[in-house]
Length: 235
Image 1 (cartoon, rainbow, N blue to C red):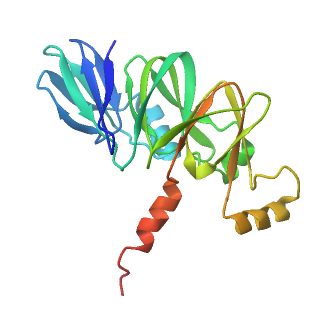
Image 2: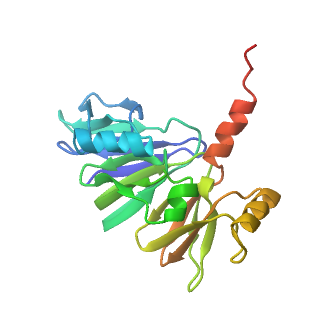
């Protein structure tokens, strides 16, 4: 099995040590450096149709980088295309759902697919890839990244964990997700809209079940909006 190590604290690398014959695939452009024993190719992971669906529905690349230690053992350094933390998740025959831009890399033993969002509210209002989300399934190591730091938030027993949609990174299939326009349970649609405007919350995602949600310290949409607001405006 490949050895994954996070190196650095601020904007870290994900270092992957591969034995000869082992492979890992990563988001396009993630390779920062590698030993010359590794061969890097671009592949439509899962086939052309699945890659087209993934690109159209989740915003991920059509071609993924496929690194194989063909000429002997070697190491590859991977880095996301945005500033922030990197985490690894060990899958043991289960599935994890990822938000837009959260995927960094995965062992070749894992399968990536696009799945219809189980939450109709999340599909319409949430920041989780619309009607479709990226789902990773199998046994192996998955690497994810986020804008800012990542915190693991457990779902309280018998209760709900409420997370702003822009801060969600990933969650396991042991959790049930739904969406709403405010943190309050009551009130109609208009009341929730007014409450969202007053608090600045926007859409929140509610998680129930057993497990933890990976939460980012920076909201990707808010971060993009902040950068855009400071770009020089053309006349």
